[in-house]
Image 1 (cartoon, helix red, strand yellow):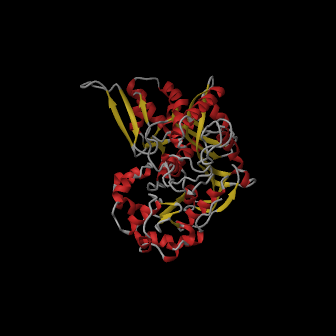
Image 2: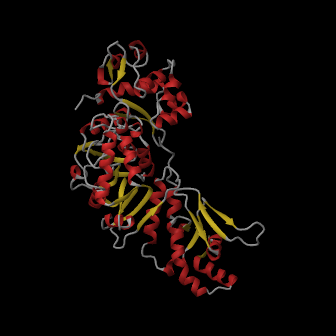
Length: 517
């Protein structure tokens, strides 16, 4: 394992970075919004142009730690402590012409409560894999990418005693967990990743995590946690080339194994949240396959955000690995091998998405598996927690009890009416939520009438009786048929039980946090 900077030297570097304004806010001010956004996509040219000729301390550190540029020793000495400039701590190395270059990337990162954090990763990988691995070492460690921030944003952030970051990489999830967990354990099969996690936490000024080397749950056998979060090496590939993405198991077996083993490592009420890929196989419904993954005693919410055909999927990860820059013919050979493996396994597509488990011990679990490619609100964590609270509230609730309940319309819901111009009545009504998953649901006349009358004063049953009388409908029939729809409206957060009967959606939204990244 190559030598990495020492955690003991992070204090002086952190002080220098803060003094220089080398923070997320400072970087945005230095680069401007377009160049800042491009850097997050792995594109460095706009940032290089924005810092060309600039000698401010923030510009110097940006060139060193994000743009992989060498700077004269005297320039670095004006910004960094003498001990670091002379090579102490291992953050800088001297080139042949005497100029200094960084040994690792350091990315300023804004914490959810305004913390000035930093994520340390391999050179050229500060913003994730979007620029490609470029033929670098197998045990490469990436920095902050879109997947990292997606997972961080969807994680439930209620205070917990014990949290586990499984497959820690550069430590971004452990860093977030440190803000609300009493104890954080971080594991990874790659020892270099654990070293980077240690640096990320130390440079960010957070308490160290307990670091353990090993695959999946092996390093924490017999232990339980209140929160497990994982951005695992989920890529479905024909071989194990890059540790950060290729799990070394056939097909989607790694994700299936992780999900299946999670329950035995969760405390009651605990969450396991991860990103995953899964196969769409000939002759099988992908929803049924994923339902079979869910362990007993857990509620689950699985969301497919995107699905790609085998050619698109192979091209995506070949570019990620830098194979498009390989020697002539190598890209084509690997592409062919990928497609041959998919054909052998009967893979007709690959899904990308999120999996969240909550250990409840319920005999009848709540299981939601859906496709949702639309925009969502981030951070999504409060909406995730609210989803499971609503599922718990609805579990075992009889239709009679449901109709006897009092409800209010969620505060972020608006009504849209559609129909021909000038028509007396709309053809249909749509309810649209402005927060969380930003769902929309089409309503019939009775449903729209009930939702419009839900102000907490009357029970749902009483409202239905009034609607039946107004529309000339059979009240008994509405009471038989409507509970399923009412259950759906509550489950998806459009209607909330009044405070005295528990209001899970509103309670969870009160825990919202500002965006990260």
